[in-house]
Length: 155
Ligand SMILES: [Zn+2]
Picture (cartoon, helix red, strand yellow):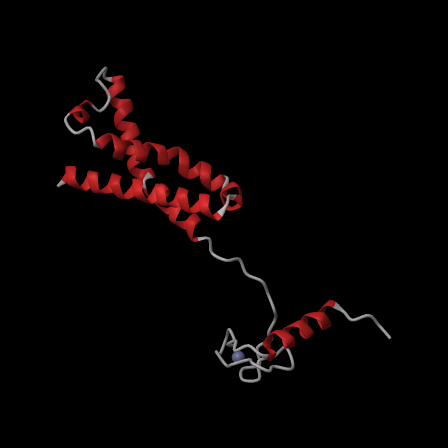
């Protein structure tokens, strides 16, 4: 009498899992309900039970606007450096349109925040769902406002 191997356990769990679930074969879409061996009866593909990570929507909603704002952020930063080197007041045109500070501020912030947050993804994912949604909501709101202001000024 030998102890069951991991493969036996996996097969047992796979068969149990599929006993009362409608799951499609990942290759041919054949319904694998009631499967008794780890092989698709339709196309012959070896079937295994795996785990997957749930996509964290708050993370995606937070990180995409930050990365998208980086290019304008770098442009704003370059303009500021040029103006400083020429002895001008930085963004002197902004005194006419102070709401542009929001657009410039968000873009400049994204230059720091996008890489910092990407490197600290684990920190974000360990926060409570509420805090993640709060961060995502704040970033999206600022991004939309920054874009709308920019488009209004450009148009
Ligand atoms: Zn199949």
